[in-house]
Length: 320
Length: 319
Image 1 (tube, helix red, strand yellow):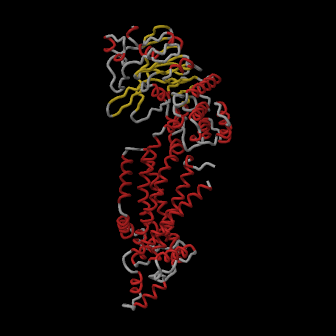
Image 2 (image 1 turned 60 degrees about the vertical axis):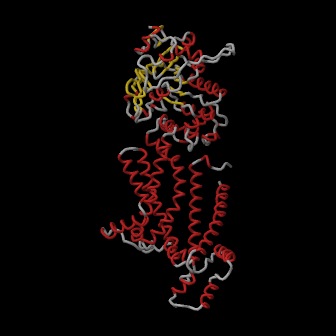
Image 3 (image 1 turned 180 degrees about the horizontal axis):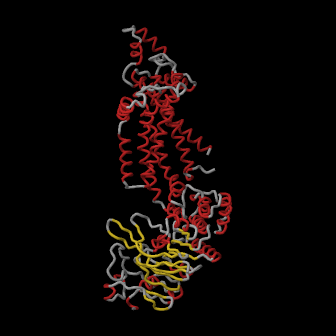
């Protein structure tokens, strides 16, 4: 077991009240496995990823409960120096907007090799050589002449390649990719995902892909966790989930994807209603107000995850 | 880069041309007659019109205005800056003699501004909304708001009259006594410096806070950099971009402040010379002083542009 997240709970405390961004989420990840976290904007998927590296912006945000066991150690119990030695080294993160996630006044080369300088004690000379190698591995053309370039001289796709190179530099055991391709052209999205998948497979790196793109998950993830309003509502191996989605929300997500094999005159079916306010959640199931299968019990008490088969869990009273 | 510098310099020259016209016209438009006051100061009492006409011819004041302007510019470029109407001294040597003193004052005040302002801004930003931040921010507002002359009087009273640490006024040349020089310049440079420091501190604070909210700071944390390294390597440089711009704009205030401070502390620099020249309507000196002020500010802004290009790769001109 590489990573075991247990009862992770991250809240934001502001003047209006408590925003329950991540509420009692648990999952596990084996070496080399890829997991997808899926959900709408604001469902807590990014916060759950940031929580792993304790990058929640303070002082309002706080991890209030839970355990994050990584290589046998609880990351939440580490000192500041210890967590710093894991960030970028054992666990790397790739963010969604390459143009704002890269420092505009530092060269690409320096930014890519910085983790090596910090964690591996490499000098700049060796760092540049390794950096060129990394840039080549993410297929940046003419890599040796690009190490001196600045982010504004890069396109979005090139910037994201550099971000991936940066993430892979120390050969981490786990990569967290937070919507790595959302800001990019569709053609480049596929290319980058292929590069990432290839490199992580070569190095046996585990990966968590956060996305709202179900297509990406279907193709690249071994298993999936669907999140809604800060909670994990369905967890399954990817083929199981796509073959038989159980939660009404997951079903809704699947139904709202446009399909080429469908009659084009048939309308897409969006999920009715709006996601709930995380500071003011309903008493029962958070999805109840939008759910077509809602029963009386759903409004009264929140459902817990129940195992319906070996690799499939769902939080819905309809399966209780 | 070379092209960028040449371009900036030629802009500056164009600006200088217009400024020179403005200075010349303003000088003539000032109320009061320089010849009259110069003649008065010789103590001859009432003099005949002949003497006054001689005076006018001697200083070229009998010619039409545009000819006077052209003669002035020609003289200025060839190093003949004319003679002071009040004292009859050559203006250029007067100038060169005082320039190092004023430069020392400027450099000293920049030193204090940076030494006080930048760390205060950084500490304030990193400990935002703490009592330390509130104290420093309030201090900065006070520093900016207190008029130079008032701060000067208080400091002279405290440190010279009561504590006898610094001389109340006067200037000791560097060549005469290093210690004496530093002691005599300590208060004037500090007073000018605190004005700049308040301004600088506030801009450093807000700019650093803005930078710390950027995504790339989160990236730096995610790489495993310690807090200190994140600030030093990733936040400070981009945070300095707006600060440098402001520093260039604020330079004008520093120069203006130097006129008051030099006068107050009896420092024989350019500011004091300029103020005396204005009192006696001595326009060869006024004009020279103002043109030098303009050149000074243009040079500083040129330096700012160059620093700007150094810090921010996005403004560097492509080869």
